[in-house]
Image 1 (cartoon, rainbow, N blue to C red):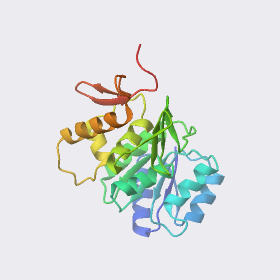
Image 2: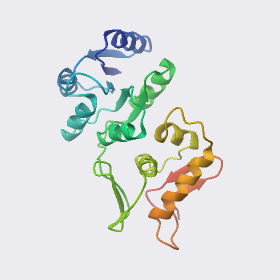
Image 3: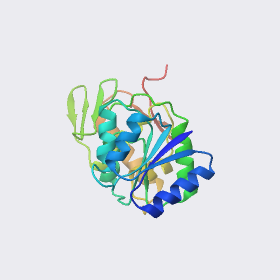
Image 4: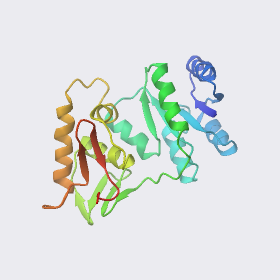
Length: 226
C-alpha cells in the first residue's frame, strides 16, 4: 500500500514516514501544497495523510482541487485546529477523515487502515438522501426543497450521518467527529442533538430518516426498511 504524507515540519514528516514504514506502507513525503498536488496527480496512492497548514496552497485547498479534478484518493486531514467549524471545512473540501494534533500513532494507524480499505470512489460534496439535500459549502440543508435551519453542531451531526449513510454510527464516534476532543459531556447530549435534527428535517407524521439502533447508536438509511 502506497501512502503520501504531506507535512512541512521536518521532524513530524520524518516521524510519520518512519512510523508508517514500520507498519508496512510505502511512504512518499511532500512538504508543500504544490508538491502534494503534483504527487497525487502522478501516482495512484492508496491514502493521503494531509496536514491542513502547509505552504500554499494549504491542505484544505489541496483536497478541494483534487476533488474538483476527480481524484478520489482517501484523505486523512491532520491539523492543530480542533474547532467543529474547521472539521466541517475539512469535510467540505472532500477529506474522508480528520485527526487533530497531537495524536497517538496507534490511532493514526487505525484511521489509515480504515482509509486504505476503501475503494477510491467518487465522493460528491453535495449529499442527498431522498428529498433531503445538504450542501457543505453553502451550509444549507433542504427537505423537499424547503430550507431547514440548523445550528452548526446539528449541521455537522447531520452531515456526518449522511456521509456514513447505511452504517450504524455510535454515540462516541459522533462525539469524536462533531464535538471537540475536550468534550466532557455525556452521550445524552448526542441524543438531544439527534432529536433537534429530527424535529427540523422530518415532516410531521412521517417516519424519521434517522433510525435509533438500540444499544449501538444511529443510522441514516438511504431507503426506509421494508
